[in-house]
Amino acid sequence: MRKCNGQGKFCTVAAKGAAEAGAIFVIINRLDGRFHLFGPAPGPAFDDRGDRRFIEELPFPATEADVTTLLVRRRKFDSDLWIVEVEDRDGTAGLAPAKI
Image 1: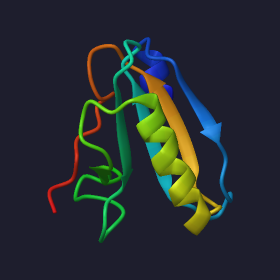
Image 2: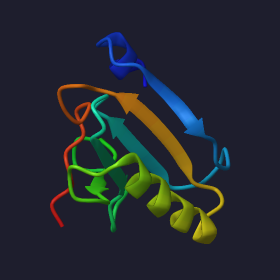
Image 3: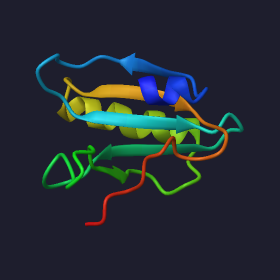
């Protein structure tokens, strides 16, 4: 979050999960009606550099309704999940899908 905010990309926690656990989902709002949605990658949580691994949950471009629908479904199975939203007109706020 600090990195994004430091780059001028507004970033906020949209929903808090459990402090000691919970999957992290990241919504990238392109501010033009297009969205990316990233969720936790299967397997190890971190890559070789120590960065958290994510997968793209929906094909780009997704709509806000698509994102909301999927997150409501995910929350039914994991009420501890965290949702972070980043406003980034130009891309994915530095996130790249993990190679699975």
